Length: 252
Length: 217
Image (cartoon, rainbow over all chains, first blue to last red; front, side):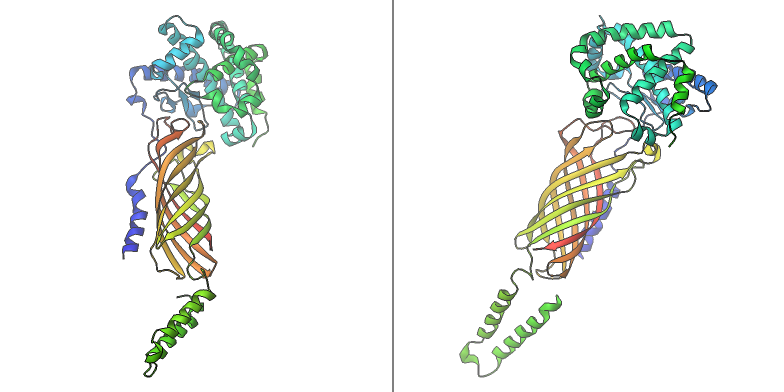
């Protein structure tokens, strides 16, 4: 009898605990004003990119052009990503915390936190927001499992950045955005070339993913982003060519 | 009762009966029975009551109560040894894999976790039987392999029961029921963030039901 009781207890214990490894994101209405403002900015950029995609292809990124699918409420991480689950993650400046705000201020050699904030907001909310939109286009065309298993992260990021640069050209915002990116990235590259230039390769990123992307200190990722931007400005073809190149990759 | 011990048991009963017969008192009533018992011990050393057990298991393993993580499977190795009486110790290594599903299903990745644990066991059944039931508790290190973070080692504990059946003296099958609580404290690596909301994850639980090939020593 005692054995039966022990077994029953063992079987019922987990049901009572209800522990999980995922949490629900807050809805847009639950966000604070700064988070809502970040979502609105990112949503505006994604809406414009989606329009370009629809005009040029049979695909769209409708799934993430939704304020509930833009996730900005996490704290203490410098993170911008689209993992293939129809959600765009972008860290807001306010949620970084003082330590990480100081880190980004150092990247951009900004004199004040206010200056650093304006660079961060434009880079992460606008440009990297569109980059996550391009990744969504990749996932729509190729499916996330195929992208993860057949394309290196280096190539995904490189192609997404190059396509985002082409998007700003057709939007008539090349001077504004390309000029901003050059000025934001020049101190990053100048300060971190000695450490990261020799590591800027597909192989290094594959073998040291967590070192480069470490959301507590993604200085390596920032350097990689700036180098991909440099490369993209040299290599970028028109938006049609960039989108069609992705469409023409072998289908899963 | 194991089948091959039955004849020996009859011999024992017979010897006891012989010792109690009238007229044999001068020989000492217990002598014949003692000598046969000694013989039994000498002819089957250790086989009727193995002290060590090695189990190779595979089966259902699932994180619980999470709509974004599906049922999974796992496998591992367990080694237990009876130290004194019913009390023993068990060392185990187990790895489980659970697919993300629902909102996270499209990413095609899995939640991978493993553990290395050590702890006490208690045998609940009499020594030497074909059915062996043990209860165990363990403490150990639990590995979590997240998608966007580096590997994380955390502290965890488990408790459960094992039902084993010996087909022959050295081999059998067992079913384990184990419940784990892990991510109790960080040992190395970053703090685990969940993949959906990127918030810090608290204690995680896992249930597993591996069926094991069991070797007795």
